[in-house]
Image (cartoon, rainbow, N blue to C red; front, side, top):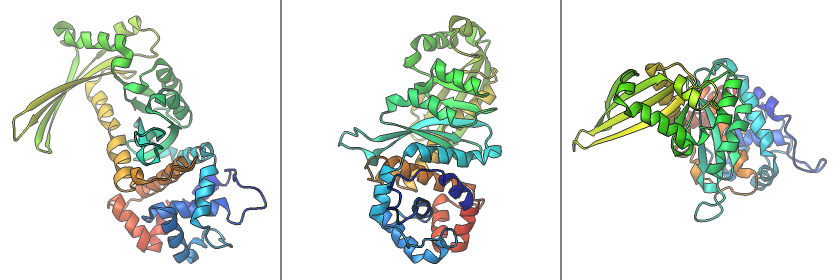
Length: 367
């Protein structure tokens, strides 16, 4: 996988002046990638690690001028066109395309450490696509505000192969253009409904509120016990032919879904209830739709949580120009590589093992 990684970054244009380059771009990107694999938290630690392991690095690339200083890495990443690294990442993941099946969850994540003011203004916001079954991040697209997700999602969809997949997005992405792009790409959608599509939401809510109409819905129920509570879920699904007639702009609108969660605190007995609404291009099978909806949350639990807790992404204070986005992409290269390794231990332990064991480190890169 190291050669594959290097193959994809060879096409990236070096932003530095030709003839004035002492440290090749590929070498610097490799040091940063391996640094993330091996628990390094900043450029200085990456340089220290690479200098100690220089003989190992020279098995992959020449490193004729030894290891580039931390400041050189900072300046180069700040100037490097992030779009090129975005495409390199999505191209690298596309080589694994045969493994990408099922639900592709799309959601945004703000890199809080990249903010330029105390109120969070200017923080980089990434819209990301995550393959639930494969456990891989497929691509990301940067915006400067969560509200810009609407324009970023179509661009993100252009970067990935969604043929045969089920694309799930929260209410921000519930737009006719986005649904149309998913269908055109050969996928299906499950989209959350909230106030941004008020007329559509009201029609769906009225259907499930009507006891006669709700009575002809198909129903699936689940019960989960854990974390000190009992959660009962009722998933109702119905044919959306009538809704498609009222809202003809929505492509292949086939089913509507209501997921009602009733949570009971085992200690206090306190009960809370919430109903979430969705539209979908899939048939009105409540069990299949419930599976897709539940799978959507893996992007939060398995991707965002890991980046924040294990990689300490929100603690990174790199803010200069393009550096935050480029570092985020390389961090995601590293996470994907670690997730592909079949060893049944945590990501945290895999990173430690890669740090202390050069053979295991090579195996990670060879996946």
